[in-house]
Image (spheres, one colour):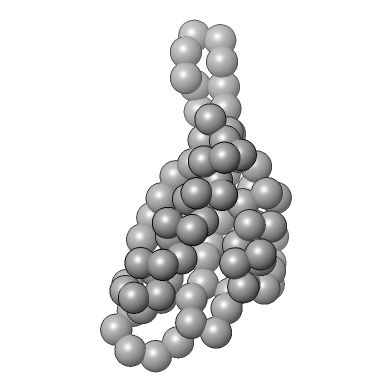
Length: 89
C-alpha cells in the first residue's frame, strides 16, 4: 500500500467472523489469518464478541478495522457494509 493511509472502524451485529472474512475475500482480499484479510491496496483486521441487545438476547458483533487509501476505502467499506447488512440484523 502506498500514499496516505487511513483506517476506518465499523461494527456489524448478527454476522459471524467467518462470514465477514468470506465477504472480504469476495471483495478481492486474501485471508492471511483467521482475523486478517489483505489485498494489494487495502487490508482489514477482524474481531468478534458477544453483545447483549436485551436482558436475554446476545448477538455476535464483528468489528472490522479497514486500512487503505481514502479513495479505496470510500468504495470498499460501503460494498462490505451492504453485504454485512443483508446477513446480519
